[in-house]
Amino acid sequence: MDATIEPPATAATWMQAAAARARAASATLARLPAEARDAALRAAAAELRARGTAILAANAADLAAFDAAGGTAAFRDRLALTPARVEAMARGLDDIAALPDPLARTLAEWSMPNGLRFKRIASPIGVIGMIYESRPNVGADAAGLCLKAGNAVILRGGSDSFHSARAIHGAVTAGLRAAGVPEDAVQVPPDTDRAHVAAMLAAAGQIDLLIPRGGKSLVERVQAEARVPVLAHAEGLCHTYVHTRADHEMARRIVANAKMRRTGVCGATETLLIDAAIAPALLPAIVADLRALGCDFRADARARAIVADLPAAAARDFDTEWLGPVLSVAVVDGVEAALAHIRAHGSEHTEAIVTADPDAAERFLRGLDSAVVLWNASTQFCDGGEFGFGAEIGIATGRIHARGPVGVEQLTTFRYLVLGSGQVRP
Image (cartoon, rainbow, N blue to C red; front, side, top):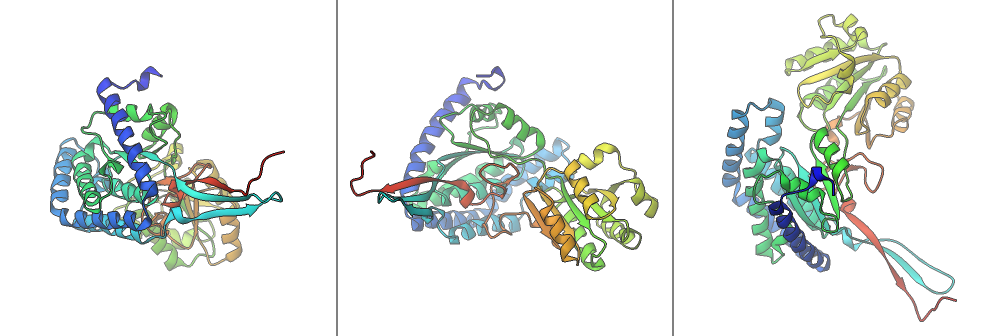
């Protein structure tokens, strides 16, 4: 094993025991009827609501430590919980419970001339390891999605959300206990020791799939060092392209929402591309809208020729995921130029076009390999809840197994049932 991920014995021992308990719990979950898993999710949602005051108190402790350390406003927003966000976590679990059972699916079936009948059926992955940063609600979403799909999960949140994560975990496991579902289906490490991350990366044969959700450095570390299969996402370097035939009011509304609704989420637009033919009339209004919302800019020379006081963009700015109230701006010449810019600078996460021209929209939608591409809608719709998944465990930008918001169906794999009547192979 690479010395860079050799965990201390205490973290390795805890992980080995936790994974063994999770394996046993996943075997039980896989055999439970959908009604039992759904009852556990609803019970966990009820516990989140009942413990809302305690969860907010734990979050206040995390926020106080974060503020004392001088954290940024964008990351503070990711860390902060409110009564509405606690209710959203609970509602997310209720929504997941209401989804169809992902394990009840026959994905394909066929017969061969020898009379053998084949079925490809959905089945749980097993034990999921989730490593995430800042946003404590991720723990509730991940637990709910994994449980619905019959998987156990080991959750390692960031040290800045430790108290919040523990309080949320306590509520979820209380719900499982009340519903008679193994509490070991959802586990968290006992402390903030970073060696637990290394132990998860080294847990080949114990964890079946690792899902990192956080900044670029976290994802890159997991991909480089993991001895376990990884379902990862790149940074959310998302673009909104305003085409020549965009409705002006629609474009202003979409760009403002895509950038400023929540600047710290991975679906926030980081770069605005606007056609040269429409920019003189529309770009000043968009800039004014966003400035009124507290946004700053990094603009290319063509944009600054239209709005003279825009700060100049450095070359690296178009490769930057701001995760804050900053927007890169470039003026382009049509759909092909917009596509070329996105291919050169994007992370294949989420892109949007604003246009009344169906042909231009079709060229844009088909011209990219990004996981999610939208027409006349905000990039912030790249979210599992908005897709009808109940919640998401992350946004996958790889090309194997899952892409886009990862919901319950993406947390299953498949196996084969072969039904015979005495056949032997010649």
